[in-house]
Length: 90
Image (cartoon, rainbow, N blue to C red):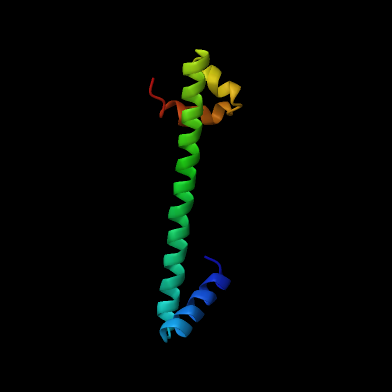
């Protein structure tokens, strides 16, 4: 969470709930925002990985390709193919 978002949240807490945060509480709010953003980023990455695995599987099933052929067709770098191969179920 960037400083502007933290400042906006602090202002909203004060304006809407008449809650004034101490410096320690503001720090904790910022840390919680950073943690939430990290969790959201991890979820986005997992969703992307699942989409790629599904695409690989669909190519394997529809075009009768091997996992390697499907990943090459999707232009997945060889250095990343192991990540997806481990998640394929045939």
